[in-house]
Image 1 (cartoon, rainbow, N blue to C red):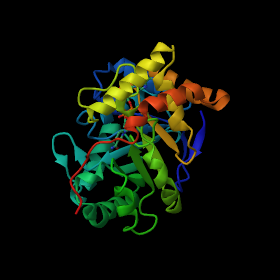
Image 2 (cartoon, helix red, strand yellow):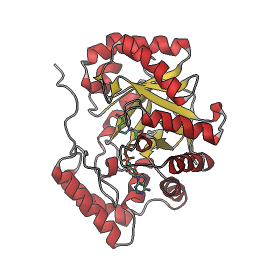
Image 3 (tube, rainbow, N blue to C red):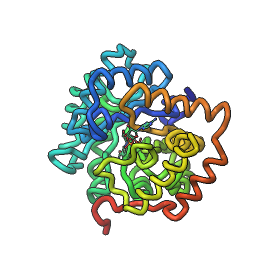
Length: 317
Ligand code: NAD
């Protein structure tokens, strides 16, 4: 598995990252044996980056990921573990200094770890961004000084949140950003922001290369927020691939992995089979390249919905 530098953190991370939201049962139930096997298989195949949040499954994802890593008996310095704070299933959003400071202790207890490698403020568009700048990031910096998190990140859907925060905090305060659903076959809008993020020395993670299930044969879960036209177009693209005996998921993974300005393509996985398929897609990309003909056909199907997204967060003044 290819390792890439993550911004200025010094971390060398696998290009395919393991998104653990499915381990919180957000895409359907996952038996514990399947979760443990998926994490074990990922480690064996060279995946070293794992992402979770207290929000996923109402803390279940963190507890299950912690259990899976313990079960795999992997040395702590051979995995990079990221979690988040500020978004909770029962409480909603709370980015106050007091809440995020308590949050990291709760996360470490659930994960069974002494520290996480990255602590993100989770979906920051759901508060006033000035709170993130003036209260949350300073609190996260104190957590970093305490050693409970090695690096700090911010996540969210609207791309405008990143320059808003990064232009207002002291240089070096934010180490990493995690964007989702903005670098895949149907939506490439993150690309325009990459030169800016590089100039700030910030590491870039793109999550949801399968557009949270839109670019899979099974299709998205009921809660998927995409507008109907996007869902229909993605279904048509998946059916087109399937009719040709090809996989939309493989194509989508490979597409997201092609941009070296992005360090990690974070894909949600719930079984060894998915791990093997996604890692195989990455290996095949490095040896044989992407199926250009299929890509052009799928791009043509998705052209009418190119960069179509959905609203997220409170309106910013
Ligand atoms: P995704 O695009 O990675 O799709 C995940 C879905 O695709 C799941 O249903 C999974 O079972 C399925 N899948 C994975 N590999 C497959 C394969 N080979 N064949 C068929 N189906 C396959 O969406 P995601 O899980 O939402 O995003 C990835 C990760 O990124 C999350 O788990 C989470 O860790 C992170 N994330 C973070 C944020 C945020 O911070 N705001 C938002 C979205 C995602």
